[in-house]
Amino acid sequence: MGAFSMKEESIGFALIENLKNQLQAYKELTDLAEEKSNILVKGNIELLEDITEVEQMLILKLGKLEKERFALMNQIAEKTGKNVSEIKNNILRDFLSSEEIGAFSAVSDELKTVLLYLSEKNETNEKLIRNTLDYIDFSIKLLTDAGEVPTNYSSEGTNNKEAFHFIDKKA
Image (cartoon, rainbow, N blue to C red; front, side):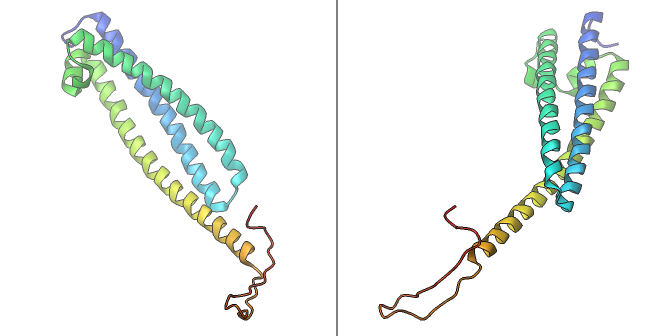
């Protein structure tokens, strides 16, 4: 057991539970990111809105969990006489029991792995979204520029282009 009393161990347990809850939420976000990739590739944009709503709920949940984690870290900082920015693994190892250290390390390592994968998946989705938007922009440009018929220059030296548009550019 660490150098602190039983009360501090409950803070350690609460921290580990918080991280487990964050891990679960990030795993759900990862699943949604994978689903989003499939939707973007297939072009099924209607389902994208549903996924975005679920993502927003998970992000709100993660925000609450992060506030809770920060409060726990502040408690640990207070108990150890350190500034919260100084709380690193070596201080946590002194604070947590040997059982908690193992659980903390396991959830921390898995959380890092999931966050790295989620970051990569979000980058991929960002590229897919950018490509989709570029395609839409290109398609709109084709439709708005369709039917332009170049004519000869006028006597004033200006080009008299006559055009008809499927979509009014001003709209």
